[in-house]
Image (cartoon, rainbow, N blue to C red; front, side, top):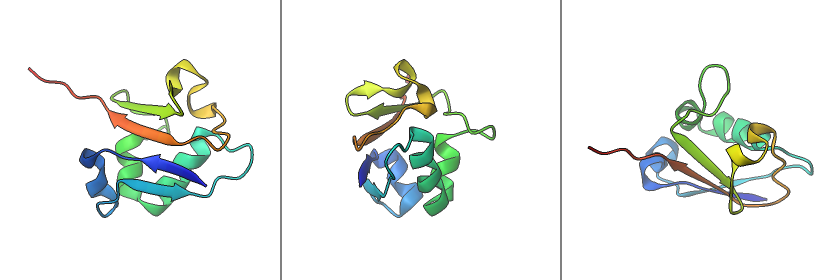
Amino acid sequence: MIDVKLPAALASECGGARHLDVDARPGATLADVLDQVAAAHPRLGRRLRDEAGKLRRYVNVYIGDEESRRLQGLATPVDGRDIQILPSIAGG
């Protein structure tokens, strides 16, 4: 079971939940986990990935302690590690 942690800014897209439990099979990738999240919470899925299925540029996803873009992106095996999703915040 993978724990997907969400910030308050995204919790509204899945009924206020700040943690989602995803049953990931052995060998599952980040894309597999996000597919399950999107199937259960379509609005959240659209906030995380674009129409081509790529992570939106303002969404940062950490697998364990490492940012997914520094690994293999959506092809990164999750290997039972927790996932944290953090949207970029801009100000000005």
